[in-house]
Image (cartoon, rainbow, N blue to C red; front, side, top):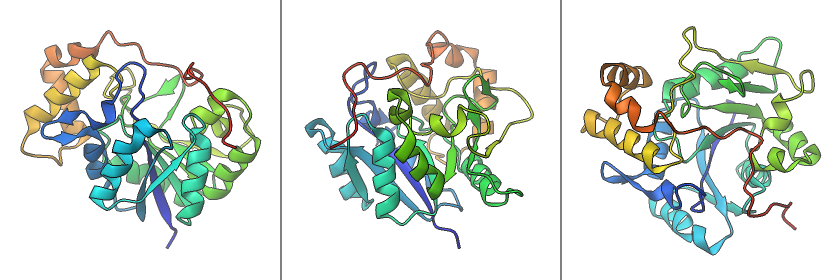
Length: 257
């Protein structure tokens, strides 16, 4: 079987909501919510947390140890390098990129994108369910799946700051550079915001989990039905502007020595 390694990037130093990945959501840290949702995937062989070597990220590393998950620590802003080191250390043949600020991610969506890459004929280097400017799944259900070879080439060749910080733009931004498969939903829900980057986002996600408690296995379609029936919940973070993939952390960048 193909070894599929999910790598969850996580750090405490968010600009708009510091420490967000360990914020409480219905009794559990957000990172734990992400891990548990991803655990429902049947296509993932191993899950790894990729955080930084910064002292401020020690709580994330300690959390991973507590939960029995492998943790790889690397450069604070060269996230592509972090992914490469994690993929290499855990013998990945296929890499699934997930982020620790998406506690509503859906295991069926993860599996759908993994399957799209593994079964593509002709083969592809990258399958993903969103491309900047072309998104049909809600923000917060993002899944990017690439081959180890494609990740390694990006790691070797990507030079721009945003390409290093956002991991996979080098694979999808230039048509023809790689073989890319975009997994779309037949109905466009790309304007819905289910990720956590601000206090308003956190309030939205907490409201969702509170509504479904104690059930923790609700699907993204269940969330959709809930927010459509309760516009006041959707309004909690409706005014938050989503950052583009070329936005970078102004606090510094560079390849790890």
